[in-house]
Image 1 (tube, rainbow, N blue to C red):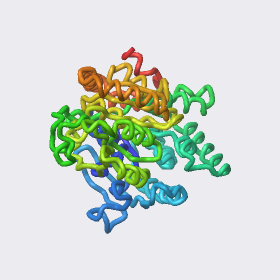
Image 2 (cartoon, rainbow, N blue to C red):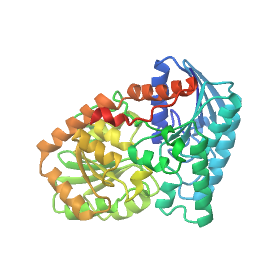
Image 3 (tube, helix red, strand yellow):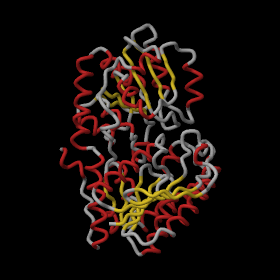
Image 4 (cartoon, one colour):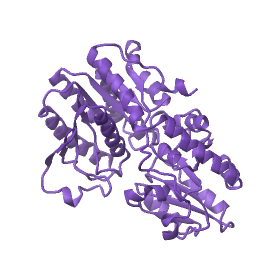
Length: 422
């Protein structure tokens, strides 16, 4: 098939999780002999400005073995300025739409959200080429913005919700990452359209994330040799409960063998830097080069997932899969029954506690710190789980099945892919 994929990030813009997801999905679909056109932005995510090597032209086209990549100006803005981001997304959407309309007929058009406006671009291109449109929802907007308090104006909230529902209705299929998200989206659709919601989990590149020795170069650079390392690695954003890390660091400040590490960047980083400066058992570090990801994740003894209350219905942290692949135990502060909690329980890869519950968090962490044998076993189970169920090639087959059914005019199969795991 000829596939037209519209996404906000693509290699080499891989500091954004969606860039990693779409890049690996495209590579897996290409191995299945599909011809693919990707329309995306010029690389900009790491510094929220277009990388110097990519400046000079607002529109670039690259030929590849499997098709082509069209990159347009992303209108970069500060993530904390919601109004400016909305304007920037509007500009990006206009250019993506124009680019998509110049690429010729394709059999299927897929638009990735966030930003949700790329769903509009995908719908316009799909209508132009009389092709089915798939709306791929990584995080559910505006729910995430509303839950975080970033979007509170009643009129803007209502407009955003109407736009969201309109996208779901117009799409021929809506792919989501979890049962939580599927229930969320289905509740916003008429009863006769709910079967268009399909769960396709994200995945992890096992060639890039290998199980390595704990005492590696990352530990040496950050004076972590010989320590028991409790690590959060990923976006240091407003969705995460870093107060739990602060509380744990205070509670374990008498233990020189335990070090807390926050590895990443994001909107919450300045506040984390402020309180971490007062705690010698907290190390804060910027993202390491991509080639060092195995060493970064492998330096941990326990990985942390910290999602604030209520967000699991609209957001599934992609870091879950990387943490599992690293072969280390996980402690998640997450809504009960969420995708993260059920995946970890199914894999036997760690412990999950309610969000923003310091006592439960500290108790669970204590049990992991005091039991290295159990940590080791949890890590091995997590790695085995992703090797069996969550590779790019496995998930590409699921996308391909959806595409084929839409092209043939057949009903799509909304069955829960987790049934095979139960």
